[in-house]
Amino acid sequence: MRLSTRARYALRMMLDLAKHGEGGRLVSLADIAERTDCSRGYLEQLAAALRRQRLIHGVAGKGGGYRLTRAPGETTLREIIEASIGRISILDCLEDASTCMRADVCECRLVYSLINTRITQVLDDFTLADLLDPKLKLRVKLQLGQAREKERRQ
Image: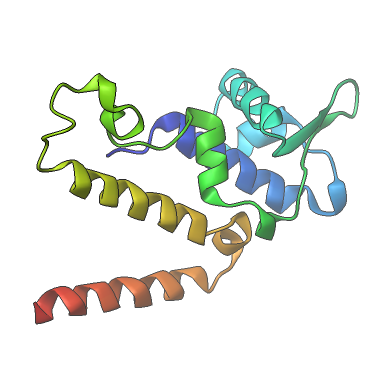
């Protein structure tokens, strides 16, 4: 599974709002575009999707911009990604068995479902605040080290 450009840019946008919108300060799309290397037009599309899911609030006009609707620690990466690309599903048949003629007899479907569940669990485990925390790298490296050690023992 690849994380789409749309999902990555949505994360960039939300992180920028978290960094530069402290205290409910409005942040312009032009400023976000400059700092994140995302086009303003693309950010406008993402802003609409993020607004629909009530992750951001926009104010039009001179001095307008966007701000987060909740504290960074209250917004998970899964919420942001799903707001930008829809429900996370590595295969259509996991959402709707009728999309696959073999869904009822597929030997791999349970494993695919487990993979999908683990992906969403990881995205639920992290918030915007976590990504802004300088200690995150250490935390993730520790988790990766534990997973690799477990693989070596098997």
